[in-house]
Length: 396
Ligand code: ATP
Ligand code: MG
Image 1 (cartoon, rainbow, N blue to C red):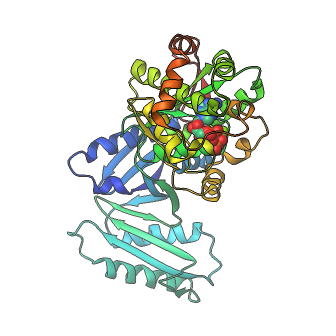
Image 2 (image 1 turned 30 degrees about the vertical axis):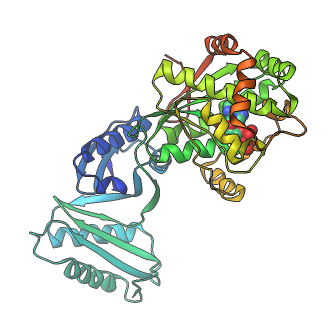
């Protein structure tokens, strides 16, 4: 036996000729999270009907559907013949299953996609409202704020469902190219990854680790964050770049007030090397305008100029409070606030430049002659991998 889920698609439904591409990717992304359970998918206008082994626990299905971009809502549904007699008996079954007290307000929401069906949406709704009244004479109709909703959709068959859950919207991961996310242990960068994955970008993560200045716990924290965002990303890899030698070099050779920016320049150049090697289209950071000294407009203009690749900062216009709200919603906040410092904090100058001159800074950066050291950092990269369920897996 299989359980059936009706999945509502948001923006994907508005796509034109390439809609199938988005739908296929979504189907793949959902199935990927529900393996080893067997599932199959039937597509219909604006909907995906998803059948899965009955043994698959509801929580597993919930976790999969509520973390997959491209879904605006979903509900467990029952399917039956397009015949009012049969529809009524299914509706009765759902009413009983809902465990109503009989005092609730209700609404019937009917939708007739198959215009060949004899009754209009309104007629279907009235018919089923009568049925509900017959069983529960005290239940009243409330069209704006009902306690209970019975949904019926007439398509190739009739589909009925009661409680629907909200999805996270967006577009399926993997439909908008590949990006590399600069993931630190903070609050911002996991949220930045979530926001770009929401628009369909396939993301891997990159972390600069300055051991022993940043501890093993700091690395574990970043690994946990990668694991936590992995379901939204449809699986991800974490590149850990050893960066102690390079940090010390900057500390000892750069002007003190410029050290943070020099470090950020290095980050961009390492990210760029990975883009070239592995075909990423963009570099993503968790920067927000004016949050810290290295996130002023001139500072960001300088770091941008350190790479030919597109640098995306999805949080640039957000307040910290807004970022924290999302971080709590996606479940990364508690990990992000653990007290292990990242390397930027430890090597931070007392008075960092906030209004750098791009030309002058570029000259200073070139004088540091770090090309070989950056190549070496890339060569020594360690890679961890996580699947779409958020489990660590072998990297291959
Ligand atoms: P976050 O909360 O994401 O750590 P932040 O407010 O602490 O951000 P910064 O430390 O200035 O700000 O970092 C800005 C961005 O640079 C981060 O959001 C992240 O994308 C990237 N970043 C900073 N440190 C690292 C690191 N050690 N490894 C990888 N990326 C980093
Ligand atoms: Mg940080």
